Length: 266
Ligand SMILES: O=C(O)CCC(=O)C(=O)O
Image (cartoon, rainbow, N blue to C red; front, side, top):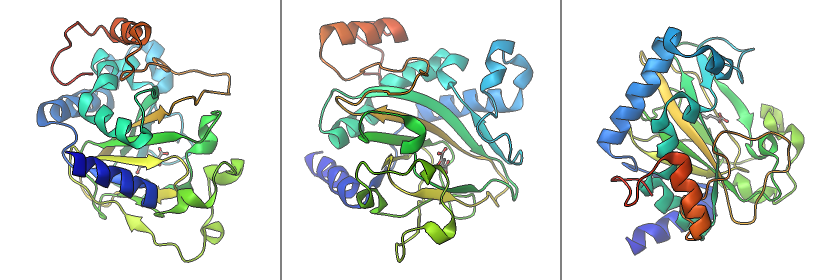
């Protein structure tokens, strides 16, 4: 376990990202998939108040790329997933601290078809925080292959910028990519979680397979890293690994987690 944790920390430091295969156990994975499937295939059951969170970010693109913001509002299961222990284990190693907090969960679904590619970008300029010490954790519900539009990263690109990330890095043209950096498709199995520093340049091609490629994407903020913008997400600011009794109490109450907690959470 110690060796595994060392590998996580080394990969993250060097490449700015790492993949943990089988991070999500099968029962949890199947439940997440079923709940996502229901949102995507039966939108009529989605309450009117939640429809504004569907397909907002990419609404100018083709329907082969779909996004659902604020997943924890759609089903309490997604809210409790904030406290999913095996994912928190990795975050705690990468942040080297238990004082990290939740930012948001969304779904990105690359539906089969030619229109689902994602432009090169860094996540940081979308996030408005007081430091860049934030991590994106993508739970790969179906796994990623080159055919189904795996995320492509530029390993090490987080180290090029430090805190000096341009606001225009929300979309980077081919010509503006750092020269001579490797582009690596992140291939992984269902249930894998890909963790990456929010300064890593990434993007990805369309899904040319016959099945949707879905990722539940979480953002997490490190210690002493706070939002600087005006908006907040549901459950933002929960500290599921803190031992501060007030924060433990907040997390348990917010997520309706009993004490002792149910298997897998916290
Ligand atoms: O799902 C992916 O491959 C990447 C999604 C992404 O980069 C984003 O939503 O910012």
